[in-house]
Length: 123
Image 1 (cartoon, rainbow, N blue to C red):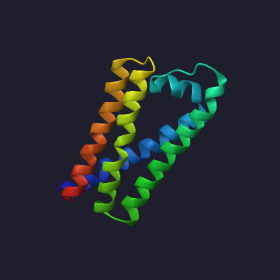
Image 2 (cartoon, one colour):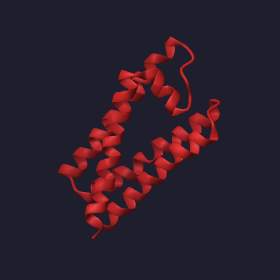
Image 3 (tube, rainbow, N blue to C red):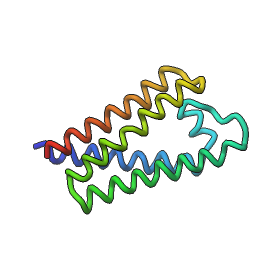
Image 4 (cartoon, rainbow, N blue to C red):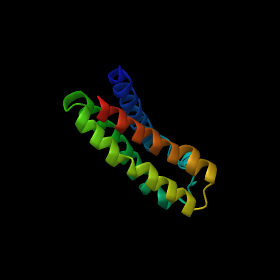
């Protein structure tokens, strides 16, 4: 019963990471604003490229684990990768972003990733 939900949520979260990564690569200014810390000068573009590559590769790795390694490996991965949106919460709060974005986007994402890990562990 939990298997389709567990795999479905993990797949959606991984695809979402790929899309976020692509957006940071293709539209860095808009992505930074959506992230909660708008771009202040063009020197920051390199960091946004790094974030795009990081998020995209995390999403692809999540999909690869689901496809080739199974639920337990994907669960451990989700558990560890939840540190990223938790860290993003802190980054937004420490850099003048709103609490609404910090908690409504980043912290909520961390909770969804942790839920995904729990569901995958239960499979």
